[in-house]
Amino acid sequence: MKALLGLSLTGVFGGVAVKAATESSATTRKLDQTPTWAVASVCAVIIIISILLEKILHKVGTWFTEKHKQALFEALEKVKAELMILGFISLLLTFGQNHIAKICVPQDVVGTMLPCKKERVTDKSSSTKGEEEPGRRLLWFDRRFLAGAKSAAKCKDGYEQLISVDGLHQLHILIFFLACFHVLFSVITMTLGRLKTRAWKRWELETLSHDYEFSNDPSRFRLTHETSFVRSHTSFWTRIPFFFYVGCFIRQFFISVSRSDYLTLRNGFITVHLAPGSKFNFQKYIKRSLEDDFKLVVGVSPVLWASFVIFLLLNVYELQALFWASIIPVIIILAVGTKLQAILTMMALEITDRHAVVQGMPLVQGSDKYFWFGRPQLLIHLIHFALFQVQYGRLCKY
Image (tube, rainbow, N blue to C red):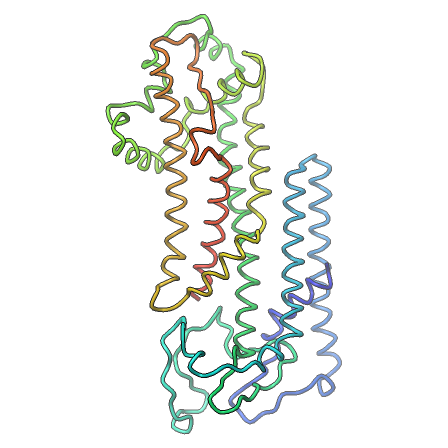
């Protein structure tokens, strides 16, 4: 793994240290004409970075094992697998770049489905030395090639390269940063989720107090519409389908989970899965569930790689693919948030339809029927896709 990681770092950042082509008359030095201290220094830095990263990942994995966090340990293994995939990508691009650059296709084919409008060819002699036509640059890596890149392959008249070595290097950078930023964004999402669930700890501690037991006495009868959960989720607009979803859409921007929501869902979970009145830490259970979901979100599945290839194919300037790549994740996240609020509201409506009077706390009954196509995991997959698509849209803009 350390070898593949080092190769990946070399392929991506090697172009920063060595400029393979310039517009000046200076020739490129080969390895046998490079000072030994320069070669040794570059190799030492790459090897040290690789070893340090491998040791850090090993220490983190050991800590997860000692703390019995199996889900997070499996998520870490997925991160290592992603690094392994990046290493193989670097290996293929490093040894296959010159062969790919030698593939020639007709000029008519090369001029189709371009991500930007084709620039007009200007006379090089009339341009000032060192100046270039303004164009889109990928991550500010301009005119840098993969290590060991040779001069551009020559094609016969009427033919051009399928993809240049410079283009392969830019694609390499895009794939590398796409996978790295996906893992980074997943970790940030996980951190924000843990901070959110930490705020629920005070509600869990409240269930241990005598005031909570008195206010939620199982022998106490109350009108359904007077309970906090039903009152906060039902109104005149909840019976009208259009206003129902409009209200759920707006509600997600204010209070995603209130105190009454947490306590009612906790009571329903304990009643269904445990004995009523059991001392169960529902907040810790949610934290473990969040870790299980993180295990699914942190990896880059074949479906996500396929979506990446499809968007590369459709990234034509007439289709405005980058616009859709940026707007689709926003639509997905808003739709998921609206759906989750709609589930809480439907549970409250079901309670009012089933009982006019409740004994103790209202009992909600969770079911797969509230989710799209009866599949709760679909929401996780949509969030996973949205996180991946956000990075692709942002990186391609650069």
